[in-house]
Amino acid sequence: MISPIRSPSSSPRKRKRDSEADEIEIDVSAPEPPSKKALRQAKKQSQPSKPNPAPPAQKKPQEQPEKAQESDEDPPGGSTRSEHGIWIGNLAFKTDHNDLRVFFAANSIFEKNITRLHLPAPKGGGDKSQEQTLKRKPANQGFAYVDFDSASTLAQALKLTESLLAGRRLLIKDAKSFEGRPDKPQTGKSSGGNPPNKRIYVGNLGFDITQGELEQHFSKCGAVADVHVATFEDSGKCKGFAWVTFSDQEAASAAVQGWVMVEDESGDGEEQEAGPAKKRKKGRKWWVNRIKGRPVKAEFAESKSERYKKRFGKGGGGGKGRNGHYTETAEGVGSEIDYTLGSNEPSTV
Image (cartoon, rainbow, N blue to C red; front, side):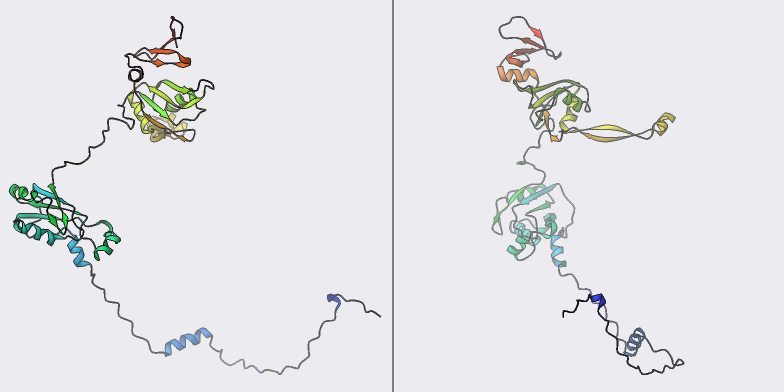
């Protein structure tokens, strides 16, 4: 006979053994035993207190002598600059003030003739690769300035150029002479090389840009007189560049630099109606160097007459116009006269 399977819930529970516990007697009048925290505090108090350690003695910086060498050390004669100074280049990084004094003394220029001796210290503590090569911090940046007390001493020092010091030929020049420096870039011309004028060239345009969108975009810079978009003959879409002509040169300059300051009026309309004293205007930059998320290139363009001379070698304005037509531009007017091939009658565009 098979016994039925019982679920765990229906299984009989184990009964705990009934053990008779011994009775514990508790004295209620006894004091409360100390806690663990109180025992730890009592243990600490019982131990003898250790004397407070003396603060560590401040070590004197060992780099102080090196810093003194890196500073603008001057001879006892004074530290004032004079009108007779030289610049010394191509110095070894290990050359210090004493090496320069010995060099000048060997060439009959003594310490009394030197009013100032300056070796600029390396920025940021010097290069680590130089420190590994020299096994010490570099003492200079490769050049120095020396001032003298008279013009005759200056002339004598200038004759020492190309002399050897620490295995390197020195380059000695007058401190006021700037010969050999590259010319500064002319600010009167743009990156394209054309002088500032009212007409600009705009590049990196999208193929879907239109003439109206360009005029609306650059209207923040100033009044737009004319917009010419280079288009494909078959589709009529933009080729990626255009020319924009403004009414004044300031507007064209703002378009080339990429931004223009506009007035931003803050405040509610009620405050503005109450009086002009409460009306506050703030200026902010309005960027025009991006069109539909694309960064555009803007630079001053050539005038139409100059462009025509370069292309055709003739005087006058204009050039080959739309649909293979030759156009002539009336200077100062901006209108174009269209001469259709095979026709003698001009038509104004």
